[in-house]
Image (cartoon, rainbow, N blue to C red; front, side, top):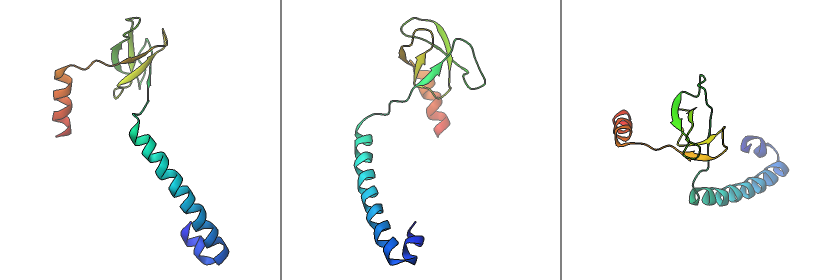
Length: 100
């Protein structure tokens, strides 16, 4: 965008003004995003698929479900509730070993 804006004086002044406005807007939104936790959820189905291979249990209706391997929160398709995956110490240790 800057290379095109430098070719003509009119477009460079308007481009830099819009770029500075969008930059200030994005900085404000980044601050608000960094202060609040991410609210991402994964779908959990009662049957496995190619992507949903991790076996979990809904904390509300206690049905067995399958979700994405990286999921920490999931939405139960059976009852519609959001559940958190309970991780034990062994899983945490394995994850640390994989990161190292």
